[in-house]
Amino acid sequence: MQLLVLVLNQVEKLEDLLKGFINKGITGATIINSTGMIRELASHMEHQPIFGSPWINIDPDRKESRTIFIALNAKEVETARAVIHEVIGDISKPDTAVLFTVPIIYSEGIEK
Image (cartoon, rainbow, N blue to C red):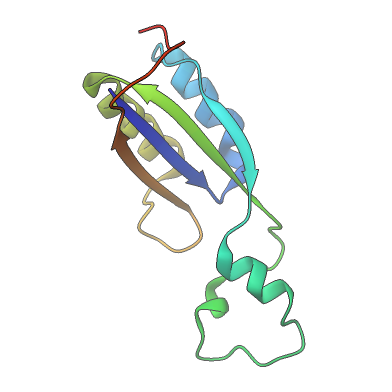
């Protein structure tokens, strides 16, 4: 099993993403509100120049992201990735999303 972690910066796409997961039989996601390190630092440096820094690409209207955790088997990971790319598009673009998986060595309470 894998733990899929998606940090979704485009929070307006959350509902479509979750509906896409459900339509493919993927359930049991946990969603938390989250804020990235650069955004947090930028919020404390409002009056300092930011040109030439990583803060220049931050959407100033977005206050937070959503982080989604889902325990999946290998086939479901590929299905979830397809849904993510269909809903969000190219996540290599700035301020869209971050996606990764980590192996689950041990679990309890996960019905798979």
